[in-house]
Length: 326
Image (cartoon, rainbow, N blue to C red; front, side):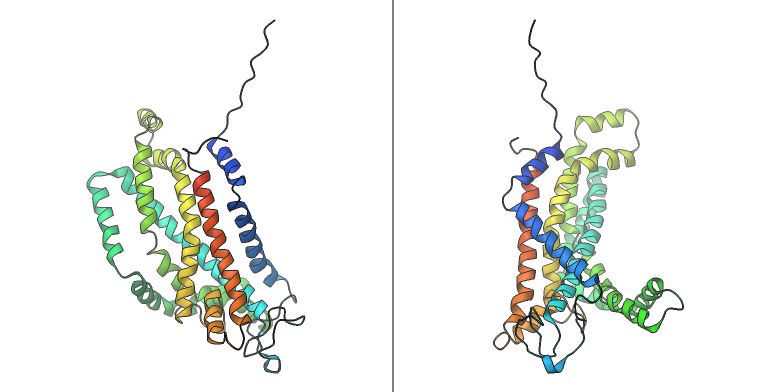
């Protein structure tokens, strides 16, 4: 009686990518660091009574060095640096995630349509991208942000009414405004950066869509009479998702760095609210007398950027179908 031949189980691209990612000694620790920082910034400020109000001034306790009462010390106005770092991190992370989502969504739609339609439409859409590339990005973002800024006041009031509800007490309205206002005031920044940072991803998606469109399974879908929209959304884009995920992971730190530059120049988050960029700017002005003002926000910001970049590199290697199967 012959011995049955063992059948090797099949494996998908995503399973192979997950195995390669787990073996990446830089990407996995980076993923853990990013997760811990995000949890600290998003969860800890939401626990009542755990952290001091980041905007409350306590002048008798100003310029305190790190200790048991204030783990990260206090600034020149007596504000707790730990609270400001965590609340500021929440804003910086929100800017990175929301702005990247806007830019990637626009870029994927634009690049997918250009790559799938082709011909003169593709040429026209790509010439528009080339023209936008030639514009001075920083100046356009500043002008666009200032143009949209007058509408943020109405948006803030509408959002506070939505979450606080009608007939709410003054204390509840003020508490709601405390966490709503920093986000709504950044809406012009979200729109300005997001609507101008999609150019690179549109080119990446266009090239990927053009490559996938020539494959046999797409021709088979056309021969079955499937519509263009279904072919694009159900067959082509799912097979182009790898480069999109990689670019998204690499775009988030770039957007966060750009927001930090704008905040450093006084064009980002408005005082008394804080972001990591504002805290670094404030700390740089007092780094000789109070070095902890610069140290702690810089450590959080640098760890986040490095970890996201390492994670993006790891995702790029893991999702590369030409990588050897381990």
